[in-house]
Amino acid sequence: MRTSTLALILPLALLGATATPALAQGAGSAATTDAAPAVGAMAPDFTAAWADASGPGAAPLSLADYRGQVVVLAFYPKDRSSGCTAELHKFRDDYDTLFGDGVVVLPISVDDVESHGSWAKDDNFPFRMIADTELTVAGLYGSKAEGRPMASRTVFVIAPDGRVAWRDMRFNALSEKAYTALASAVASARGQD
Image 1: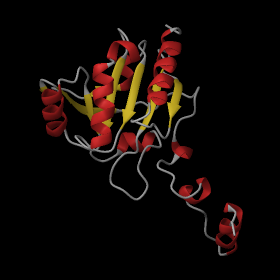
Image 2: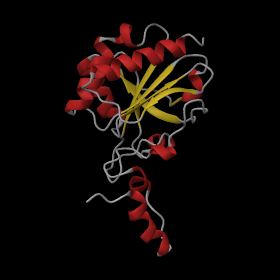
Image 3: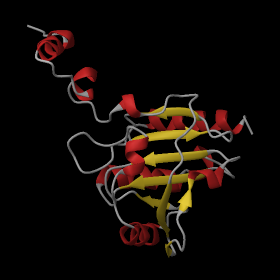
Image 4: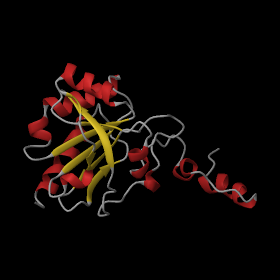
């Protein structure tokens, strides 16, 4: 017998409680999409520490620093985990095909700048990696993993005007279709230059 979401929420409402976002979206939801900026909305600005293959950045970066460029924000759970390694290796290996010149790719996780710098150096990543140790940026983008101290795997393409051009709230790092959709979204956003 199937129970509808409404049947689960109604008893809570009668008790004066409210449904959690996960209940409202259905069990197993990875990210709280209600908090994520919609396509067409301004991308929330943030300032955060970062590292690349040369080590931690001297000064924090802000999303606003990249206004006028296409930006890909790629939230992922943990440095060096299997799915995250597959995703960032794909970004590195197919950079020209997926993104092209002038596109800023910013992978983001809960890991600190030391972890990011070490991994970027070991795996020769050509991008800055954002340290979101308090999940502040993930919160702005509806990308906190529910019940876990890490980000969900989500990807946002930000157009040169600072608006969200595309988002995938359940990016599948092991699916070629996910990368094809991402490349198409980046190409479309590049056309807005």
